[in-house]
Length: 424
Image (tube, rainbow, N blue to C red; front, side, top):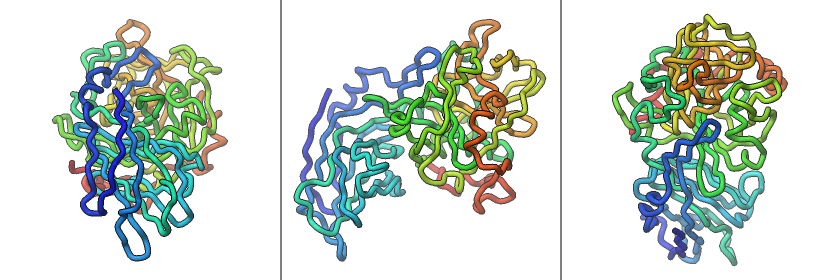
């Protein structure tokens, strides 16, 4: 289904509402909560063709500036992001995107990020986005247009702990909400710096997991984001978890996203049992400074052993952050392959998840492949001891965890989820 719509101008307050007619039919025609085999990230959103051309003649006056606004609203959307084309603002003019709560998602200037002119805006959680263009002089032609809207699947918020990806679940599913650990400073710090990795590819959004390493370097799987072109369409999602502990609570009301900047280092995806020439990782820099708010984790080059306990922080099937734990008996270090069983469940969307050592909360591995339903195979990942030499040149020399002054005692306070507006 394709919908083209040219909007009429509206005054600054209230903004007009853009509703996607026929959205239910669009979503019904495509399986949104998709589970794909092994190395295929799950689909969490589909794009809807829609034309929005700013008509600036009736923009409202605000002192020396004129202000044009438009509210984009899609009922039942889990998140929204819009695609811009022919973006070209004059110096001093700006386009601000706001979430449904009024938080500034991003401010766009010039020809947009990296002078791309055509690009996806950052996502806003929920059913509504507000666009606010501030300009000083009239434009002869519209300074941009929107040609697509990505509509997120709301089912990722409603799905119960432990989905139906039996290939990767070591039955029974034993996922937990991460908020169960907000009173554990060490684990809460690693959770807060763990992220979602969302890429707009073609007409869908794909979701993986990742980690913000020291110096704002994001690590995920190469099969999730493998090139600079993919990086240009990727955002890193922070503060996306349920607001209760295994009680079905809704997710945080307003996640925070940062743009992928530059591909720094990578190793291709190969077999599910990795080799030294196919370690399935990508390392990226980030536009902005998420570390100042959400902290970072420190990769540990010390090899993991069979006797050590681990845990995995992940976004299974694109759901809000969840965590699984395993004893040493569930962990098998098999050459370059890290295998894990029993309580260490994963799903599609867990690709790129950080694997931490229970004893010191250091990152010791990177998850990338399922297979727990096959005896002797297990869910699998790479050892950080194999990856670290390849990413170490791109990390700051300081090897310690560090946070901004917002964190007391070197970790986020336990009440942080409320402090940052986690109440839905």
